[in-house]
Length: 205
Image (cartoon, rainbow, N blue to C red; front, side):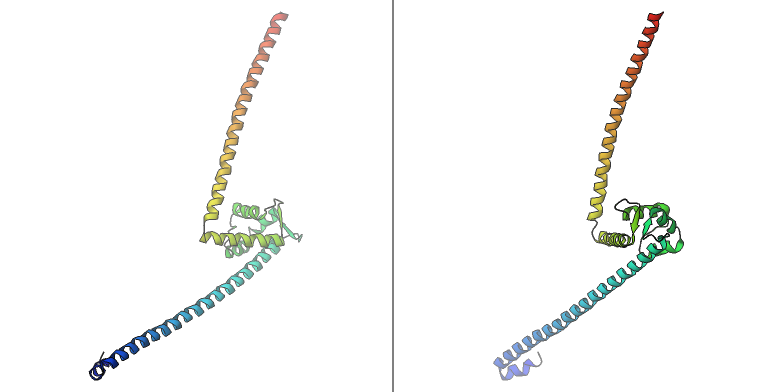
């Protein structure tokens, strides 16, 4: 404003042109500053994304290394497969429990170790080979991480289990009713047979 005042005294048109120039210059400077800031944010975001990818790769390699070591410790007979009994035995060792804790998998109690083995043993073979052990454990951890972001899958599983439990309960109730009818029928037969025997005895007498 102080700059425009003397110019306006000499040339009002010149002051208008100078004001327009200053206005557009200010907008241009602001755009340049905003462009630099946006570019800086994009570069920082890209570097952060690359860092996260690298950390994820390192974490995956660490998990695979830990799982390989766990499998080697559990495979007591060096058969290339871990049985349920071998897995439960090795899970009683404190250092193995700590290795699983590093993977956010607790096997500190026998029921937890049993549950983990049964989850990994999807084929129900009572044993798991090295590749399946690593692949399924890694997949289990990946699914667990996804549940932290979206619990829809967890809700689906819970509702699926509830539906199965309801069907099992309905089937058990049906079987219970049929068993009651069968017992009543047997009682009638036994009673009728007893009456027949009594009648035969009376005839003999």
